Amino acid sequence: MTYLNVIPNLTRSASSYAVIENVVVEETLRGTGLGRQIMAGTLRAAWKAGCYKAMLQTGSSKPATHAFYRACGFSSDSKTAYLARPT
Image 1 (cartoon, rainbow, N blue to C red):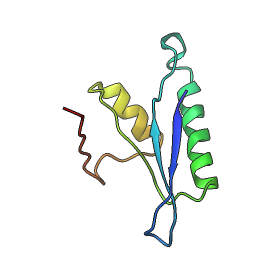
Image 2: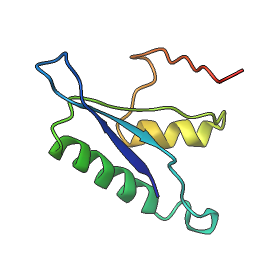
Image 3: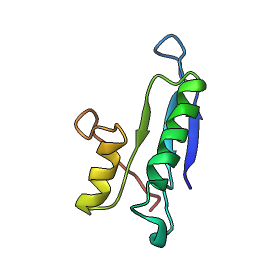
Image 4: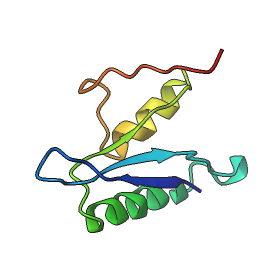
C-alpha cells in the first residue's frame, strides 16, 4: 500500500506536487515486484493529477530500501529534508 498526497502549489505555474507516504508491502510478498507495481501506479496517478514532482521520505537505513526507491526513479541528492515533531 501507499498513500499519495497531492498538494496544491502557488509556484511552478500553480502545478501541484506529490508527497508519497506509508509505502508498505507485506513482508512475505517483498521481492515479487509488487512494490514496484504499487510505486509505478502511484507515480502515474501523481503525473495524471498534474504534479510536477513527487517526493517521499524514509526513516529506514536499510540499503535495500534505498535501492528500491532508486530503482523506482527517486533520487536522494536533490533535496534536504527536515522534520519537526511537537514537543
